[in-house]
Length: 273
Image 1 (tube, rainbow, N blue to C red):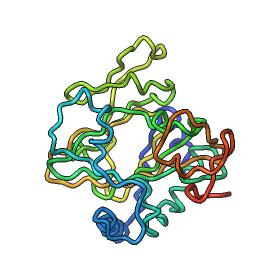
Image 2: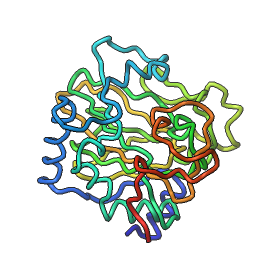
Image 3: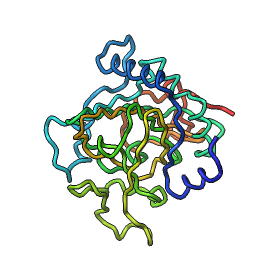
Image 4: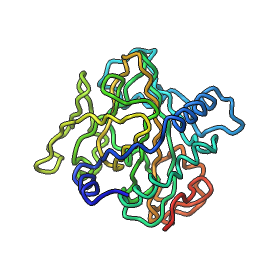
């Protein structure tokens, strides 16, 4: 369980480093399973398995990129792998997410693996998660990002902007300098006193990091010889509603009416107190 001090830190910053939740053997098993899914060797398939940089080009308009760069993104690997579903149901992670969400129920919104290969690993542009999820409200979701390799500055770890989760939706104004510093295209829209300054969010192999769905974050290129694999699970508190405004890859799996709690087989309950 998270301490009062940790909960206060998350409230102030919008992100928090948790404990090491996977041991060496557990990490290695997930890596092996990830390889099978990436190669299409599992009986069931995830919702997406593609190069994210080609699909989300709009996020990278301010950055120079090689055509060979890639970020392998797999969405809902839990549907292809019982081992990854077990991970999404991890007792410590779910208990701590419930604390951060202030909820007695958690459902999986979706998960995603992001793999930045050595040397050619591309960037993930500055963004907020919730504005990219236009079929659910309110913006109370929290993600658990677990590293399957040490995620450090050298191999393109995430960077976060402290306090940005309290500023509202600024997704369409987020941009990056050539050296990957975030900036706001219309800073006059930011609340008074807002400081746009990013800090590295280095996470050890097997460690969990939490972030709010409105926290500004991104990650630069991986030019190192190191792999950077991670599994992020995005959790919905029990009161999350289906409120569609645009399409989303998970839209096809929704079986409830607008305004209703977003539930169903593709959004399973993984924590209930």
